[in-house]
View (tube, rainbow, N blue to C red):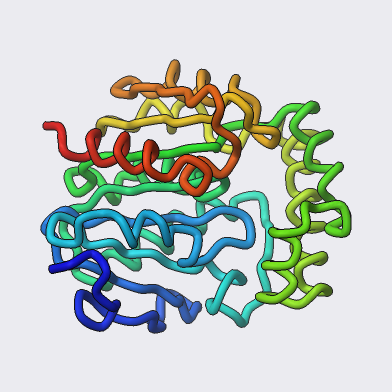
Length: 268
């Protein structure tokens, strides 16, 4: 099938499914044997992965993208940021794949979704079912310098025009601002009351599947030390730095990014 075919021709349009106490919005596109679970970042939804979904071979891959609770169309409820929110998202993502009767899959995640993807990979629930993991622009811990960066993003009026406009159109300004405030507060909490830890070294050591860590050398939100830490603490991992890459590698450098990821997924 042509990669330009509509969603209805190669999969299902976005729909909702009951997972635990949440109505989760998701889409399932493609009909290939290699299933990919796509986990979005802050304020992200299924649109985070447009250039992956539009360009990956749909005869090779089936792509499941979803909106975590409080994001996209998985509302209500409003987004909440308890200490374990990424572990909660990981559990929901695994439950989604179980509800869809997917026996084996790989997980891809960006930004906060990359952290969620790593938790999915470390979970006993995915043992023997997960094939590979790909993460980019993400982290396992937070430092004082990281929190300083995020504090500079607290006021959404200071965000770059394009992402600010997109989020205002999608969520409305009050909700957009409220979520960002809560997101920054959570990282402050993690830094001062949890020693900055998001994922423990033990959890990272539990990841046994081949894992590709990608990072942009010009990422202004997540310093490269985080990618190096992940590579050092995930045994079966490889690291690739895109020297000119920024935080949104999959948009900014889509052709190179997609080729790198597809090559990794295709290798045995």
